[in-house]
Length: 111
Image (cartoon, rainbow, N blue to C red; front, side, top):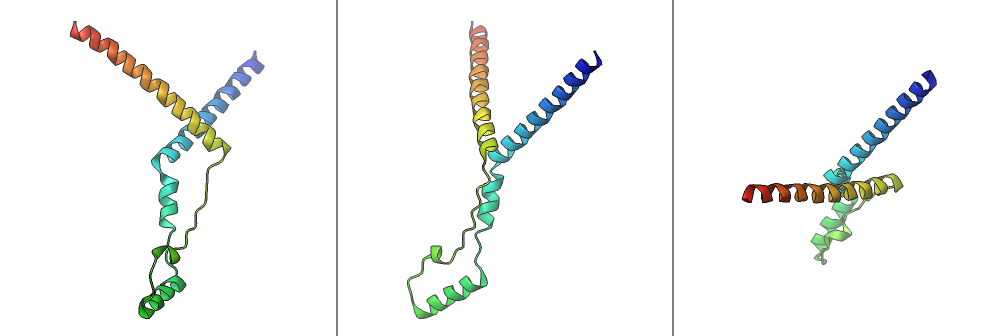
């Protein structure tokens, strides 16, 4: 019996940990945190500023894309992709369920 209780306890903690990881991953994905951080990394360096000032002084055509250094890092992996798909599916079915419940309640209220 003790081994069975230990297994159940380990399984429960493991499930809780995985669920917590899922919730955190989903929240980070939905909040746009990584996109916000990546957008902030688009900066003008000193060299690019000097190049920009020289081009302005020389009267050249200026395109901002030539001066911005983009440091895009993709943080997605199989785990985040899988959790996003699962979370989207859960969201879809919960939405349908809630809408159907409110539809039934509204039928009772109208009568």
